[in-house]
Image 1 (cartoon, rainbow, N blue to C red):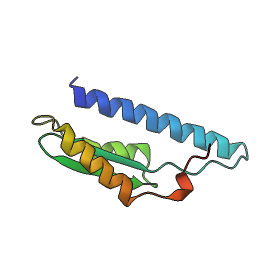
Image 2 (cartoon, one colour):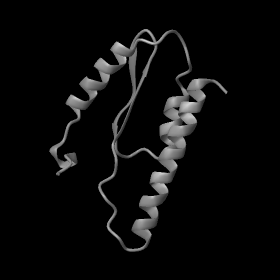
Image 3 (cartoon, rainbow, N blue to C red):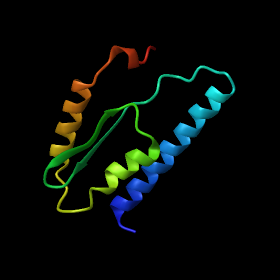
Length: 100
């Protein structure tokens, strides 16, 4: 399996575990915490936002979106970090702020 496939597998495992935990909590009559918003930035020579601030897609739908993107090219970490900064700024919400 290539490295990108390993990343996709790890993300899918996380997403399905998180979804199962929220479903179980709701099934016991609990109020589930605010749903997570997912953003995924893929990069090679350039950064590409594959998923941005998604609150609604199922783990299967998120994975399907990512599977449309295969491995290619180099690793421009600066482009990825710059795009991550822009995604965070665009989608920032004080509702998600952690209080200390």
